[in-house]
Length: 375
Image (tube, rainbow, N blue to C red; front, side, top):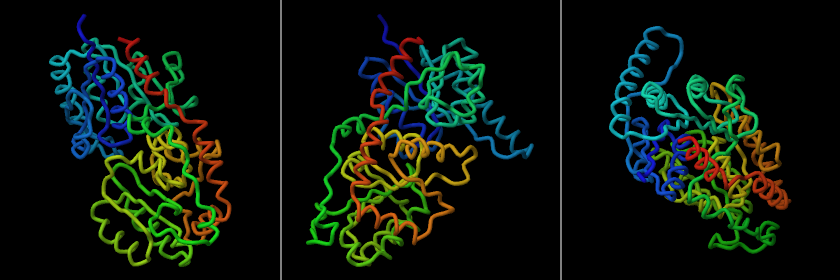
């Protein structure tokens, strides 16, 4: 019997690619050939792809209402559809699954034209605009949340709740227990210079970094009292152009810190942390829950559909984290929250347990089952 061949289509950022990579890992365990098609933003992550092959097709995002800009976008997407048709004829996939973002348009449209079965996976609590426009064209829709805003009513019959798949690196640390907090240190006792007994904070702003995270949090931590700074151990993922100044600030303020533009194994860093400070993209929220780590979530502001805010509210409602909207963050408020954690560490342990209770490590298996069933 010939091996099944699946094509996954995803936008070129971590929010779309990480679940695509996770599904690829599971399908490869089932001896399935997997190809991924995306856009040019994938360059920095292509080395981490578990797919048999990565492909790039022309794509563009629809922004604003300028007729000239919309025409250019339409022409680019048209070229993308033609390129995708050629790719599909060459690969001959049994099924095409889109993970959202406008780069999924050309492969999904081309697949429909060629009579290939198709599906969508939406990672967020709000259905993405590209997925919403494609929903009526596909055979199945997988969702990560029970209630998804903007999911077309006439598509409910083809929906399966699978959850958001997480990568093998996340599954590898799902059973790592929440690290014990050194209560003597937090209460002002002896300082462990190695960082082993310190209050460990992981800070990252998404797969492509975030300038705000480099600007605000190192400065806010540096402004803490001497005795509080001595209790901290910080791991922060920064934009490459921010690295030198962020490292210098931590060094100047005598905070034990490790800063990099990219961590090969961010899930391992997450598993070693007492508190995560991050955006609330769908993959981040899913990984926090599977790992069982409490988080201060700063949703991406100005998002068209506020998807990150709604994602974060799902964890906050479960008692698994705290939302700080970027427009509302103040130094005083952030310091107050950290002092509260240091004074009552049980708050973090309770939030860690709550996060773990809503994590769905089986999502990748359930999504792979749906794909295989749909072929």
